[in-house]
Each structure stands twice: as C-alpha cells, then as structure tokens.
Length: 451
Ligand SMILES: [Zn+2]
Image (cartoon, rainbow, N blue to C red; front, side, top):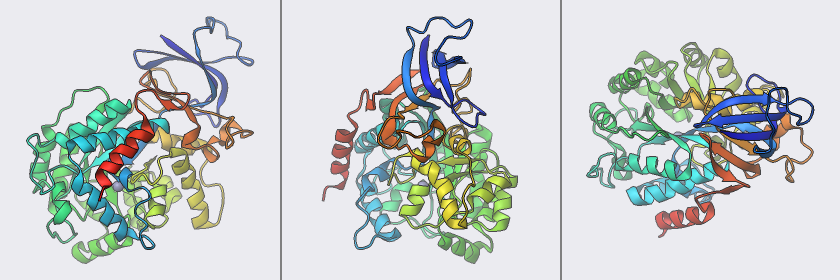
C-alpha cells in the first residue's frame, strides 16, 4: 500500500480542487481517496498519516497526450528557415524521417517520452507511420520500429497506445509514395492489417490501436479495411482530419465531398474514432462528428506552429464530440499550454471570453485523452482507476498566489514536481528518476540532424 497526502487534489466531477486529500494505492490502482476534514486532520477511520508522502501543491490525475509523432521532437526550433512555412517544416521532417533506424528511433523516442513524463504526461498516443527501411523495404522484423517505440515508453515510464497508421498514397487522387515517404507504406490496407495483427506486445504499459494517416494517404475503397480491423479488435482508431483547407479542396475535387463525409460513408466515424485537428469542418461535418460521438483531438501549439487556423472547438464539443489534447509535432510539450489554448484560441476566434470551464479543460487533458487512447480506467482520481498522480507546484514564480482552480491558466510543464504512473514514481522533485532528459534529447537529436 502506498499513501500520498495531497495539499490539493482535483477529484472527479468537482468544479475545483479539494484541500487535504489522502490517496491510497495498491498494485497500481487507487484503493481510497479520502478528503480530510479541517486542514489535514484525519477523518474518522483514517489511520495516522506518518507514512504518507506529502505532495505540496495541486495533484491532478495523469495527463494523456493523445497525439504524438515522437520523431518530430528533433524538429523543434529547426523549421523556421526563411520565414518558415508548412513546406520548410515538411522538408526538415522528411530529412529526419529518412535517417532514423530502430536504434536511433528508440533513443529519440525514449528522450521525447521522458520529456513528456517530466511534463506530467502518463500516457501517450503515438501516431506511428515510420514503419520500414529508408527505401521502403521492411526490416527483418517488419514491426521493428513499433517495438522501438514500445521499449522507449517503457524506459520513460509512461503508458503507450501505439496507433499504427496506414499510409499508402501521397495524394487524395492516389499518387504513389515517393522518396522519404516510401518508408511509410505497406502497399495496401490488407498488408498493413497483416503486419499490425502480427504485432502483439505483451507488456502491460502498451496497447495497439489503428490509424488512417488521412484521406490523402488511404484510398477511399480501402478505408473500410482499416476501420473494420479497429472495430473487430475493439481498439481506438485515429485519423488526421481537415488540418488544412487544401485537404478539403482536394477531397472535394476527387470525391465530391468533404473528408469527414468520406470517412462517414466508409464506416470510419464512431465512438472509438478520434479525428485529429478537425480544424476546417463544415457545419454538416460538425454534425456528422458529433452525432457519431467521434472524438476530436486538438493540438493547439502545433496548429499555431504550422499556421493551420482555428477550428470551431466549442461547437464540436456541443455537437457531441468528446475532446482530447495532443502535442503532435512537439513544438511544445506542455499539456497546460494545450489546455488553456483551447479556451484562449476560442476567445481569439470569437472575440468573447468564457467558452470552457477549468474543469472541462482538465477533462480534455486527462480522462478525455485516456478514453481516446483506449484506457477507460485512467484519468480520474477515483477508486479502481490506475494510480496516476501529477503534482504541480503552487509556489513557483508562475504559480505563486494563483488559486488552485486557476492552475490551468498559470502553470507550465516546468511546474510539475511529482509524476506517478500506475503507482510507480517516475518523476520526483521535478527530475526524471531514470533518464537524463536534456542530455538524452541533445544526443539523440544531434545524431539524426547532423549534416
Ligand atoms: Zn499528427
């Protein structure tokens, strides 16, 4: 049995944090959550607190990063040549993609995931499409790159949902993959499905899900093959959707409909599906997503970095789409920043304040993200859930004087002091216990960006 005494803890269905909460866990699960009465005095029936680890500040459930491309971490700060547009970003991205092999992928992903752990992220959804050798030839183990990601997450101490992405073509009208893109492709959706079905990691920290890279990368007649595999296996299915208006234009030109309609017509939408970005949906698209309970994963810091635009986020939430958050290209790894951007971007878009409560932002960052990644038993400080704890200090230069309920509008990843994943402490006093994160990031990124 492990016990923690949180100065404040944000409990499920509470509009704001509760002071003095005793949290107990055994075998990685929360066994008791007990608010103490009157400033730390034990309530009746609660034993002495001598063995409880004190957690000064605000303790949250584990944060879920629902959309990641681990290797994009090597691009941070390197994509602004000239003035830096989407294409200069993609050129650098392809240069890095061309260099990675299972060993360097493991080193880079391990460091990137450890940075996430430092930021309070206890679970990551890796949207994985870097499958094969640089010329498109499969490795001896065709899932060697997937295995590298599983190992990386284990070293970093966080859970992983490996969203294995089907990526077959380079344009909506079916042009073949060329150059660095050849690594992404399996030929057709059936061969993709065979490879994914053969990958069965048994580690408790990982689950395998599916992804459609985008309507650009999977021909319409093969969308159902991917959707059926995910449906039969009961695993999450993620898809990049309408990130840029150009994708909508190309889809209309080829198929006569929006990407969302195309996905709906081929059985891709539903409660196990998450649309990533959904920045440029039509009103009908919003209804299709909401009525099917398709989730929407927002990646505001990447969307701002890539000049994608601002999506109608509140409308999508009200239409019925659960929200989750992702750091995507890792221009920033900070779910506090992603969460407040959901509200702040909506203010910029509408010139009005007050679209989301702090509790709604917390839900997107925690239970919403975990649900999108297939972990229905994580993201809440409640009995029976996974024992994930993230403590944020309230005495830093950023957070001093801030009421606990305001943490999502003040704290940064640098304010995270303690991270517990499945009952195991991964970060203490703001330091990762097993990975020297800055040193490993520096080494791994130098290795794959050297000219
Ligand atoms: Zn992405």
